[in-house]
Amino acid sequence: MDTLQYLLSGFATALIWYNLLFAFAGVLIGTMVGVLPGIGPISGVALLIPVTTSLTSGLPPEAAATSSIILLAGVYYGAMYGGSTTSILLNTPGESSSVVTALDGYPMAKQGRAGAALSIAAIGSFVAGVISLIGLVLLAEPLSNVALKMGPAEEFSLMVLGLCALSGLAGKSITKALLMTVFGLALATIGIDAVSGVSRFTFDIPELYQGIEFLTVAVGMFALGEVFKTILEKDADSGEIAKINRILPTKQDMKDSAMPIVRGSLVGFFKGIVPGSGATLASFLSYLLEKKISKHPEKFGKGAIEGVAGPESANNAASGGAMIPLLTLGIPGTGTTAVLMGALIMYNVQPGPLLFEDHPSIAWGLISSMFIGNVMLLLLNMPLVKVFAKIIETPAKYLILIIVTISIFGVYAVQMSVFHLMLLIACGVAGYFLSKNDYPIAPLVLGLVLGPMIENNMRRALTISSGDFSIFVMKPVSLIFLIIAVLWLAIPFVMKLRGKKVIVNEEA
Image (cartoon, rainbow, N blue to C red; front, side):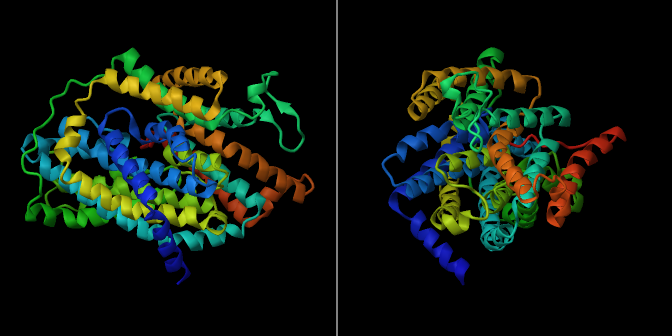
C-alpha cells in the first residue's frame, strides 16, 4: 500500500506542468540524439546537464533536481527509441545497442517495409519501457530497505563490484578498461581532503581545490570528443536512406512480434539490473534467443520482424532495469547512469538506499515521469516517423556548431571560470585520442563519480575496525561482493586464455 501511495504522489509531481514540459523535451531531444549517428545517449545526457542547470535555476533545490533528472532520464530512454531509426533506414546504428536491429531492420527497409519495422520498434520499446518500470516500482522499495542495513564495509565492497562490473565488460580490452577506471579514481582524489584539510595534487592551482568537476570532464570527453572525431576523421555518412511507405504494421506483423516483444522485455530488464551488462548485451541475447526458438531461423538476417521486435524491446527494457541499481544502491551500471548519478550529486542528492527515504519526491517523481515519457514517445514516434527520418540528413557542420556552442556556454554558465573552459577543451582532445585507441571513457567517469564515496566508506570502515583491513572480508556480505567482483574480472580473462570469444559491452 505504501508503494502505491508513493507512486501516486510521484505522479502528482510528474504531472506538474513544467515537469511535463521537461519530460516532453527530454524524450524529444533523446529521440533526436538516438536518430543522429555518433552522438549517443551518454553524450546527449552529458551535454544537457549544464542546460538543465540553467533552466531550473529559479526553482527550489528539490524541485530543480527533480525537473533536471526527469529531462536527463528522458534523453536516456528516448535515445534508446531513436537509435533504431538509422539502423533500419540507413544500416547505421545510432548507438551501440541498435547494432542488432540493423541485421533485420535494414533488409526489411529494402523490401519496402521500413514503416512496419519502425512502428514495431516503437511499440516494442513502449511495452518494454512499461514492463521495466513495473519491475522498478516493485523492486525499488525492497532493495533500498535491504541496502539500508549495509554498513560502510559492505558499501565499499558494493562500489568496488560496480567498478569491476563496468570495467570487466567495457570496451575491447579489460586491461585498458581497468586502466581507465584507476585513472578516474586518481582524478577523484584531486582537491582538498575533507578529513585532513590537506591539498592533494592541486599544484597550487586555486581552481583545483574543489576537485576536478565531473560536469567539465563528462561534457568534454563525450560531447567534444565526438566533435573532434567528426572533424578529424570526416565521420560523415553517405548511405542511401530507405523510403517509408506504409507506417502501421499489419495484423500478421503484430502477431509475429507479440511474444518476441515480451521475451525481449524480460531479457533486457534482468540484464539491465546487472551492473555493467547494459543494453548492448541484452539486445544480442534477445536476438540469439529469438533465432534459437524460431521455427524458421533461416529468415533471420533477411528481414524477419522478430529480429527487430526482440532486440529493440530488450535494449529499452535494459535502460529501465539499469535505473534500479542506480536509484536503490547508488551503483551506476552503465556510462549513462554514471553521468545521471553525477548530475544528481551536483544537486546534493545522493543516489542509493537513502534516496527513497530522504528525497521521495525525486525518486518517485522520476519513476512516474518515465511512465508518462514512454506514452509521449509512442505518440511521437508513430506519427512522426518520416519527420525523424529527415533529421538523419542534418549536415554534420551544423551539428558540430550546436554541440560546441552548448558545451562552451553550458560549462561556463555553471562554472563561470576560464580555467574550466581550458579543461573542457583538454578533456575533449583527451576523449578523442582515448576512444580512437580503444580506451573506454565510461569507466573513467564512473571512477570519478564513485571515487569520493569509495574513499569515504573505506575510511569509515577502517575507523570502526581501528585500521584493520580484514573488516572487508570478515563481514559476510562484503566478502560476497568482493568475490563476485574478482570473478567478474577473472572469468572473461580465463575464457580469453582458453581461446573462447568473449562478447564485450561497449554500452554508453
